[in-house]
Length: 346
Ligand SMILES: Nc1ncnc2c1ncn2[C@@H]1O[C@H](COP(=O)(O)OP(=O)(O)OP(=O)(O)O)[C@@H](O)[C@H]1O
Ligand code: SF4
Ligand SMILES: [Mg+2]
Image (cartoon, rainbow, N blue to C red):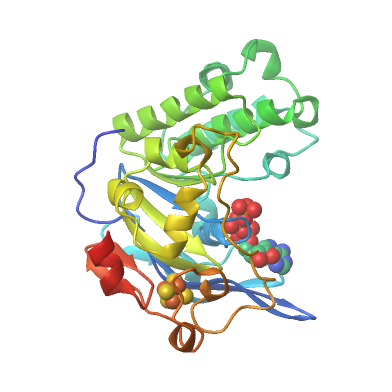
C-alpha cells in the first residue's frame, strides 16, 4: 500500500456528472449523477461490473465522448491554478482542453489500439509528445534527447529491446506490448492526473506487477493523482487509497479502501467482494456470482437501480424511489435505503 498523501484540496472534483447517448431506440443514461473527488498523490479506485459507466465517466473528464453521447449535466472541476476550471464546459477540440489532455491529465485507454496512429511509429508519437510538452512548459528538449527518454520509458514499462521497438508501428505489436507502449505514452509528460482504465488487462502477471510498481512510484515520488479503473478488486486492494463502487451509471458506495474491503455496507459492494476468486482459495467450489444479470441499458429499473438483483430489497420502497447517497463520513457514503441497519452490521 502506498503512503497516504496529505493534500487537503482536491485536484479533481466531479459533481453530479451525467452523460447520455441518444439512440433511435431511446436514451442510454450511461452516467447518471456521479460525484467523487481525487486528491494530489492519491489513487482512487473505481470498480463495478462491465457496462456500469466507468469508461464513459473517465472519457467525459477529457471530453472524449463521441456522438451520439453528450455530457448532459454536472461539473468536472479541475484545479489547474488557484481557480478550478470546469472541464465539462470546455470545447473538446478547444485550446484549453488540448493543452490539458496528455500533458496534465493523461489517459491510458481501455482500447490502446485506437490511441496510436497506424501510420506513425510508436516511438515517434511519444517523442513528439515529449517535445511538445517541453515546449509548452518553456523548455527545449531536442529530438535525440526525447528519443533517449522514450527508449528509457519503453524499458520502464517492460518492453524488451526498446531500442528497436521504438521504431515499430502499433499494428506490429502484440496487444500486451501495445498496452505497455500506451502506458509509456501516458507517463511521458509526467501528468498531474493519470487515468488508467483497465491498464493491465492484456498483460501477463509479472509485467502487471512491474507496471503497478511503476504507477505506485509515480504516485509516491511525483504526487501524481491516479484514477485506477479495474474489475480486479485484488488490484484495488493493493493500489487504491479510496474506492468508488459504480452500478448502472451511479455511485453505490464510496469510502477508504480498508472500509470498503473490511466493512462493506452496500449489498452490491458485498456481492462484488463475495465474487473475488482470491477470497475463495478453494477454486473447486463454484464462486458465488451476483444473482441476475445487468439490465439492458435502455431498460433501467425504476427506483434503486440494483433492486432487481438485491438480496436485501424492501419491495415497496426500493422499486419506488432512488435512494440518495447517505454520508457516513467525509467522502464516505452509501446509496441505499437500509443505510442505518447496514451501518450497524458493518
Ligand atoms: N458509443 C456508445 N453508444 C451507445 N451506448 C454507449 C456507447 N458507449 C458506451 N455506451 C453505453 O454506456 C454504458 C457504460 O459503458 P462503459 O463503457 O462506460 O462501461 P464500463 O463500466 O467501462 O464497462 P467495462 O467494464 O466493460 O469496460 C453501457 O451501457 C454502454 O452500452
Ligand atoms: S435501496 Fe433497497 S434494493 Fe437498493 S441496495 Fe438498498 S436494500 Fe437493495
Ligand atoms: Mg470500460
